[in-house]
Length: 171
Image 1 (cartoon, rainbow, N blue to C red):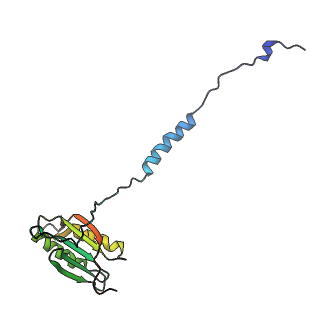
Image 2: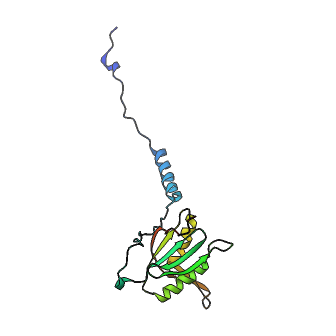
């Protein structure tokens, strides 16, 4: 049996690619993904390390250097060169942030050009406490009676953080 060559050839047709369903899927999927995507905004604070408090300062350079020391039982506000300016023991509700804000506002009125402050922490201080103190050191809020609104203004926005000096009593 001899077959002819014509019968061995098959009709080869070009296959048609139907991508309509895929395109419909993309038209729906891409906007859905863009709408539901979560665009997070990161807030970054630039922090500096404070200089060593044991370094002797030259007499002509003894400018005001604000230090806020967070201890387990109190918050101390002081000048690195002059010593303590205020001690705020814990109340029944925790740290006295309101008294701290008042003292920092008073210091800003006394030193209006000062923008930097050091926050020094004892070990095992809660992170939330650090954030609360940083907020009080950076910004103050005043209620404006006339406009019935809250006004915010900068206190000491350039913050440095570090370890608090160890107290002499030892625990």
